[in-house]
Image 1 (cartoon, helix red, strand yellow):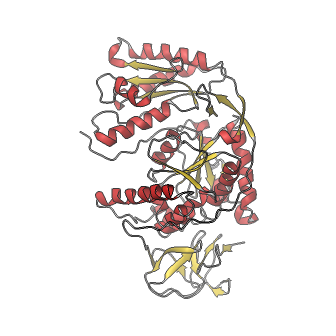
Image 2: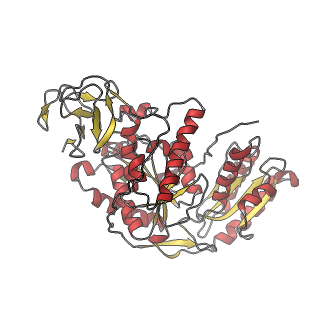
Length: 489
């Protein structure tokens, strides 16, 4: 199979492999060479007429398009605009066939289960980043037993911020301190910062004093010596932790895509959607974020909200993010990145309709603000941007033990939690085997989305049990990025 019409309503089809001008596909003769992931017209599309893909508009023709012609940024414009009014039209959501399985994880005192047992250093302020990195490197000699890593999650914030921006930083750091993948945490402060340990603890709330320790660098003569002594104790305590059986219903999985191509919405994202249905149908939880990459597909998500109250919260999240763009004089319909466009994605609607495939078909059960922890099982929407590291960090902060990251272009980065890179095409999986963990490109050959989702489910269970590591874990590529919106003094 070298081409695909995704939905019966579509007036374009997608090339799954390079096609040549003069070849006939679906009853039309191609007028142009069509690269993999790019679209060609199945019928004449008049100027101003909607271009339909996934059964929904992805924009309108900016010039007449002939049958067999390449359909892309040169002849399509977005339909997106500013803040909109929406109607709640709840869709009938059929039951899904879920899966229940077990994995071996680390049970924490609050009842949650971690899939890793690591020691994390969380700076309250960027001023102590270098200290955090230095002691993390030295403390790796203490790794033993079930402790698998010592990580410092540095960032530039924690001081010279005001209002909601400052609180956003505190909530993000608090989510890391409370994360179940951490068997022990050292909160490293300076002493004079806005987010000093005293103020941070007011946001953080109660913690386990055995597993969460605090150190102000200004309070001691040798901060590295003091920090290393604490880290040694934390490693000794956590090293005695043992994995125990836990159910897949205790997993919270973050859903993210980046560096997409025209196959992402056909292979990798539907594969993750099939996985999400299996997980949620068995009682587990998934989080979908990247609010700007819901623009153009938001009504589909709104119709899946299980109550009017959730619909209203989803509308507030979508329009609130549009207002954020407008406040800074930026268009809410900004085209995808150059890499996305090169890969065949034409408009933001084109990307969004493919992006939301990751959420599967279950009901939306909650809407989370940035930094809010997951509260209910099922599918939650999370208010965060599309930037890869910012969005992936936000998923971890809200409690995701791992992130499924689909990509058609490839990326080496990792978030604080295991970050599974899922390729949309097999050529990428072969070329960047040091980055890619799971190949969903086989769907172009098999057409079996459900089977790919089941294979991903089995992979995740092994990953959660520690039987396998992600490529970013093996290479040590991990970091955080906190969402910033406000004044820096």
